Length: 280
Ligand code: ADP
Ligand code: MG
Image (cartoon, rainbow, N blue to C red; front, side, top):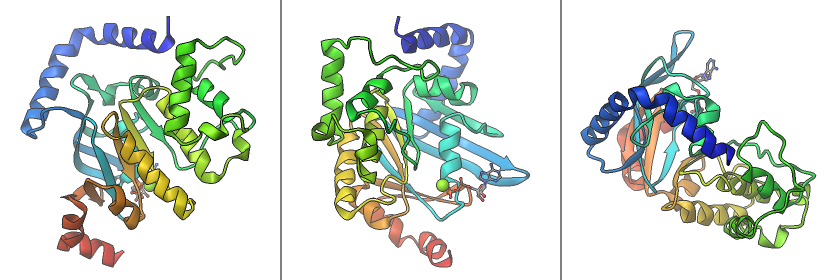
């Protein structure tokens, strides 16, 4: 059995007892916000570090297939928010749900990654001595705790899947190059490709264009907008021009809460936002 599937089954079994209560709470929360199908929602999340509130009653709702940009000055809580979603940090209070029934505050990081939330960190973590193709092959094996074997024969279906992802992340011509030979931007795309091999429903991307050339930045914009729809994509980014080029809806975080939310030009005209950005 596919280890990921095994994990899912176990997870369902373990949680069968309280799934009804959990679902009622989540449906209520979704309805309150007027969303038909939120895939991710955080409600009234607070995270304290030694009494300092990195997140302060944060509520955030991401729809299925949406592309959302999260901006905000340094220290606003953007990374902490991603840490809560991925289970790295436990909130002191509040609720965090993935889909209708998965309570993220009660799942391990490993379970969260396995059930469809992929996170791309700033620094790419590819296997430099392996080829681009092999990196995607390695990423197909869900269980990161067991070093996968590259000697096992791939099925035709698995090859097709790797080919499709190679094209999506614009690395079809580089498939036989070792990852170490890629440019910085191409390594970032490869890492996105490695996440895609796991078929995530949500992709969290922290500062995707840091260190990229202008051309790489433009192609990254196309890549991320192309991934939305099939995936929900949440992008944290400082570069306003980039955000403007991809954003449908922008959330501005400040001091651990949502300061403003809406279309980029609306948000930019918001006096609260202007004040925070001029003041920082
Ligand atoms: P952003 O990503 O928006 O720049 P962060 O989420 O990294 O902000 O940090 C929010 C606030 O929480 C900052 O003031 C930061 O110093 C603080 N913080 C984050 N992680 C920790 C931690 N592990 N211990 C103490 N303070 C932290
Ligand atoms: Mg950060």
